[in-house]
Length: 128
Image (cartoon, rainbow, N blue to C red):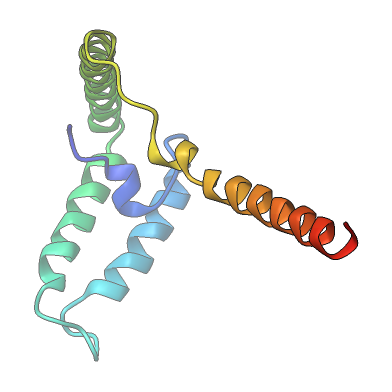
């Protein structure tokens, strides 16, 4: 899948240019290498933020990015549907046994029945 520049900047797909600029300024201040407390790995993150801003600030590049993102999402969903179909076919051919979760808890019923029978026998011995 193509990188989602909206997700990198933390804005929605219908964000205004002002909101995109504000997100860029906020993130560039956070990830700038000259800021105190910054780590060495943040330069690549700053590069990603800059790349996302340059793409989304240009209207033609933003429209192209939106088209590519929609196409990428469409292809991803088609692949997911194909995987689901294959899993469905496999599950039909190879039924699973009942999961353990549903089999658990039967010992409680047996324990209660045994306790009740024990009480009945005890009462019969004492009173009978």
